[in-house]
Amino acid sequence: MTWLNNTHPALRRCWHPVALAADIADAPVAVRVLGEDWVLARLGERVAAFPDRCPHRLAPLSAGRVEGDRIRCGYHGWCFGADGACLEIPAVGSAGRAPGRARLEGPAGLIERDGIVFIALEDPVTTVHEVPEVSDPRFRHGYLGPIRASVGAGLMADNLLDLSHFPFVHAATIGTDDEVTFDMEIEREGHRMIVRSEHLFPNREDPGVATGERPLLQRRRLTYTYETPFSVCLRIDYVDAGGTTCWRSTSSPRTTIGAGSSRSSPATTWPTTRRSKRRSASSRGSSRRTSSSRSASTTSGCRST
Image 1 (cartoon, rainbow, N blue to C red):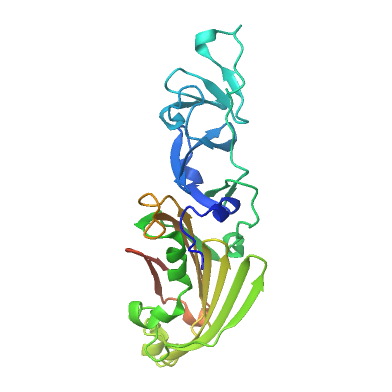
Image 2: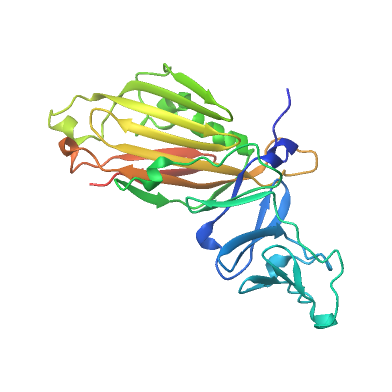
């Protein structure tokens, strides 16, 4: 069996989140993915990505500056456009000719989606998962900041996909005391897997339980959507109490800790996005909290009233 570590060559043909789109403003941003250093910059109306080194003396371009639709190296002032072409070399003047190596090569793919910048270092064989709840006006949206952990990105995704830890880690919130095993329907579509499960759980946070309007044990429907390599979306539908919460989490492998290391590798989870849907009329006025733990951090969201 081959261990899929944070720098496995197969990951070069996948999409990886590298930054929040809102953080790419008027200055270069240094990022690391698959053990490589890259720089992101908003040049004009588009985000561009390049290896974080100037071809002149290999100085980090992230230490330079953005000038409109160009990025300028902070060492000798070489200037590059969004397509990677060298547009200016101050030391040779306007009559000078740029050498052939004076060019930046970007990744095979770059896309902004749902407020996150994704890149693929080589021609991608996967897709960036679309979350339909993002465009649903009934949902309230919130973004949580990235979480870094010294662990393989695959293990961070595994935490969200793991139903069996609910009764233990989340016993006080979304876990259930009564069920440790679940009946599941599994569907595979190319590089995507969808898992559906419906079961009873003690809904202690539903005010309708205290008033006798609804029983303690209620139905909950879980729908997991996993997109290769490390993107997970969890939709929780509260069938009896009403309302829906949707979480989207995607992890980015940064690098391995040491040479030859295949485990315990730093990774970043790009923001777990919480989507909270309004409850039905029968449950208005109540609020519900959910939490999702990964690595050393816990994220949570609240439904609207």
